[in-house]
Length: 169
Image (tube, rainbow, N blue to C red; front, side):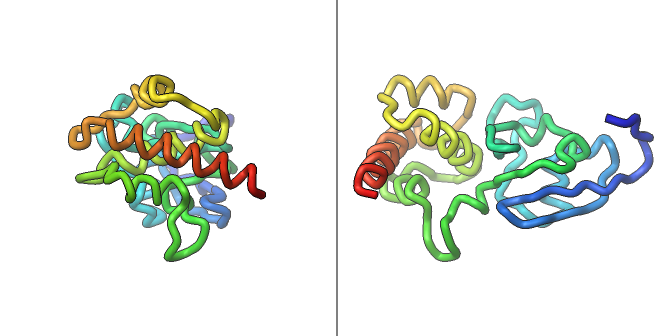
């Protein structure tokens, strides 16, 4: 990566949820701030700003990542998926989002976007998890409202529905 001047602005080009975006960012601008304030994608939440709570989790080039620990200029050229990109089409929820609704797996909703982005990746890579595996995977996310039980139930429900859909395809 070329050396960047601390006060210069740089063009950052990203593919976000399948669409090309670009904006100007100072080298020290966090990806969370770039997404929210420069591009208006406010689904990614800023919690602890230290990578501990998981609220800012997005997918960068297909893998979960903490947007609060990533500089916008580091993501230049990357393919990013945010919670806004989970729904298969406007007005329709993904299988995972629908499971969250069905199991009341969100209350205040602050942690939900990050948890959904992590679970979306997890269920694609580990389609048949058990309760303990989901709980261990979610240990990197903090939720102050739900007590995690409905989140785990929703994840297991979504996993079962995704497996059924794959078998019936």
